[in-house]
Image (cartoon, rainbow, N blue to C red):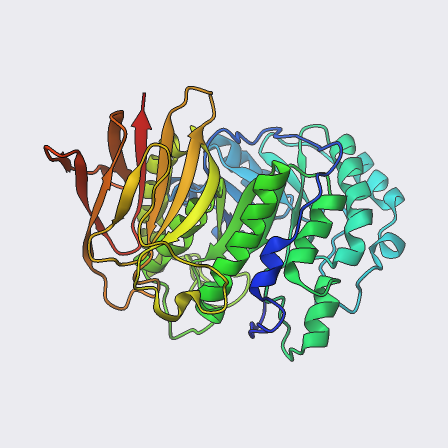
Length: 439
């Protein structure tokens, strides 16, 4: 969770993409009360001024499945249960935040295991509590101890999983230098930071936050690539926190900007999306104002979450295999990433897939989880990530004769197939679509 974000890009060259991630021995695989067979959508913060039944119903109507940074508030948790919302609760066990890196490597000394045991002895369970927050954005110097803490917490709290969130690749503080960035991460590069997490922390997911309006698209793509590669090579689920609020109070995130963040993450295989922030947490222009009233962000978020849930019902039948950048009009958005976009996308089922005007798309290749051999592609239309000049495009491709469908946020997309086997459909800037090829 950031207060001010400044870019330090010299540490993040394309070479970091070649890190080999070690498999963590003995994952703690624990869903508990969280149904991880579906695409889950969360938010950061539901402050006490927004915990009436009407507020919690609005939260559920907005398509929110869980809340992070919730304190133990039994009346509110009772309402969460009524509306099928989960809480990842802070303040139950000792907290930890990496901050500017000054406390790196000190967690074992300051938060001994005995404190977690004492906390568990006092804990009163509640069916709405899905997870126990054990810390945010730690240094890699604390990862070995975090591995011990995670195992201990998940044994002490049998109905909950332990939640930990990691730094983004800019790892910034208010006065940022290369030394401070290194101090925060505890490693020389971000890819090494993620590799150390995978080596030491036995969670079967990897969660991080990234706020692209502050630092740009290229770093966003780098972060998605590094984390996605790590998750795919070690068998973890990928959880991504993105922004619905703004660092600049004069700027409101648009609906298309919400779509771009969420759908680009899905193209890299994300299985959980969290929005920061629903009520006051950090920055401005949250979904609810300081009096608990809806801002313009509520309807935007409700619409995008509905699209995510609709696509998610089919999307979660597949697991991500690879991600490609396709198109010839990327401009500066790929500068410094090391990514080399393809003119068109092809695999063993789909071929010659692209937008006919060569605008950029992110293509996530997916295989069925049930072994049926069904194939899917998740497409994020990436031509206009900051919603400056949205456009309509024609998506064109061939498939190998299977039954093909295209699912968007508003339902199945009309599609035509000509006599030569070419499929075509219309897509829009920042839209996400799932193309399925079923045997």
